[in-house]
Length: 602
DNA sequence: CTAGGGTTAG
Image 1 (cartoon, rainbow, N blue to C red):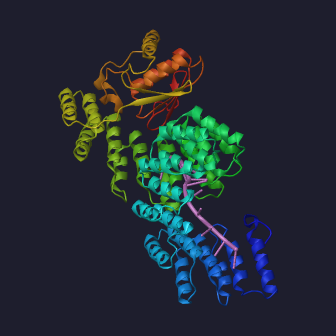
Image 2: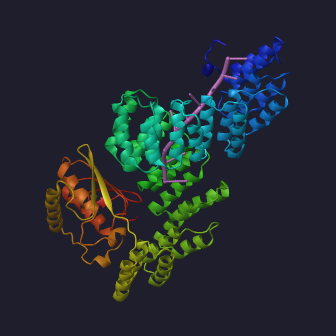
Image 3: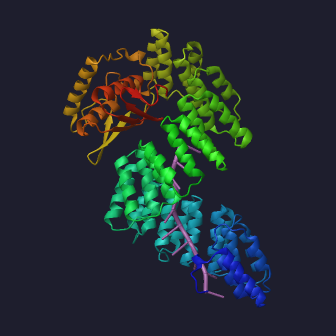
């Protein structure tokens, strides 16, 4: 027993077991307890071997039993440890503090809240209510089930018997429950914070969409002098990815390099996801090819990344490679694959992979899968086949699917059907303005102006909720946010001038703006006053102002790009000799030399 | 003689 535990392999442990048998020492409770304690370390190892050892012990003492409980807790059937616990009690062996930490661990892992509550009773009965380890295990149990009131109760019962682990378990519980402000409060109150405290705070922000706060918090963490670890950096990569902040993501990447952290699967996957979501799909590919090891999620991220960039064929090629390597796709893998088909208009392939998913892999299609298929078929003009998919669904369809059909009706000129679906959708959700916009647009295409006015009036009267359009651009070490209209940015005068320059130069190049707002083809932003300048145009104008000539302009926007802005952006890349990458609400557009990577299909 | 808290993706 000289080697540290974590350096001992399963086969070495088995050798030790063999020698114990040869020396006829098998059956000794303390010795076998040690053996079990080694077996408990191997992650999710099956418990049958451990159990066969435990069974040879004539009179198992609490030490040996604790370690067997621990083996169960680490296995795939953690709740088995409770069965053993009851036999321990039957044999009149008194459990100790170790027994309860292992038992509670088992309950947390096996989602046995009811069982955990019973164990909690035994904790009190046997007098371990003030043991820090036991209390932490209890708080962890309630935290992992989002029972924050119970966690808090345990915490409040003896507030002095706690350490940083106690506080961290509390943070995690409220974080999981989405109570970010409580996490913040506890984080401020706690007497000392370690890396895990910071990580939990960061994850609370990222998981609940408070991405700006996460960036701020990470800055404070660095100022406090704490060295971030793998979990910190993976979380921050996720924040950078969600916000599409390439410069920030790159700075995290350089921290990873400077800390000499190994390229683990987690780090690698998070990095390639970050690059993909920041528009650098080639960088993602490079990373992917150079990763020493990958797992299914790595492939998922890469396939989804390629799909979001409209590289449908490449995504499918990668998926075929995945299958050739003998890997087993998950439901998410097929979300990526079907998305790839839908973004690239690959109808035949889409049908093929949808069938493969259900027939060859027995994966039940979820709403996302149906969404891809309906979108794919609808956009390709196969509106009735899209409807058939919805009608044959095994689950009840989300209205979003009908909204896709509605959109297809508008694009492919099916006004009567569109009118029916549009009215039905408005009935279902009168507060969402997107449906009114689509319906009005369909009437406009049919030149039914009275209907256009009627629908728009209805929308105004009902005070529908609308999502304001915004665009982000990272420049000069800051994030600049633009909303439709202008005047809020400190350089708004220059931006205004730049917009005029753009207009003049595009006009000289022959661009004719789409004058009638009701004729606007696509656009969730139609609902915004059409006189206002869409947010991405402000961001592009600003980008032209502040970035060096010839450099690429990267924009993120929350809604989908409207047809008009899409046309203008194409022209700008030609007239100004710039590359512009826009991540909109549904995908990436790489604009270059007057063309877009989506080939106007999105 | 044995123990604990936090990881990403659509």
